Image (tube, rainbow, N blue to C red):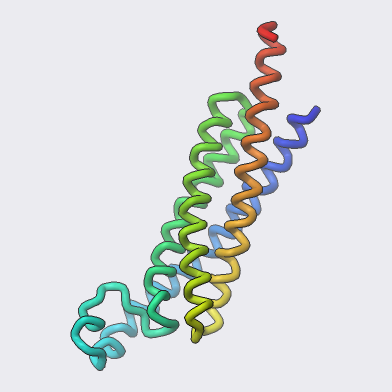
Length: 170
């Protein structure tokens, strides 16, 4: 019975993460597009080292470029992890749950990196509303991804115990 609770919690968290990571992708992709369109005229007035820096965004501060790129990367990996994680959780056996656990930990690490850059951007200040939304959603999704990792890891123990009980290897 405990496994059904872990299975439903993991499924709900993975669906929530799928939605949140999709929102992160949309906002980060908009920021990259906006940065590409406006960086030529904005970067032309900068001094030489800043002008040739490849990750310059006309909105936000100097941490914005790194934050947007890593948020986009975490979003894409997070969507892929959530989709494959849902498939693995629905199968609910040891090897599939180990796969879901490994990919969710990797995604959590990338999301924590993006969250750290979001905190740095908040510390530096001066961002517009879209970037603040991306910062907040990145911080929220890092927490929900953490809970998802914990739910999947709790489910691994339950699934392995069930498999041992069914095969008689108690």
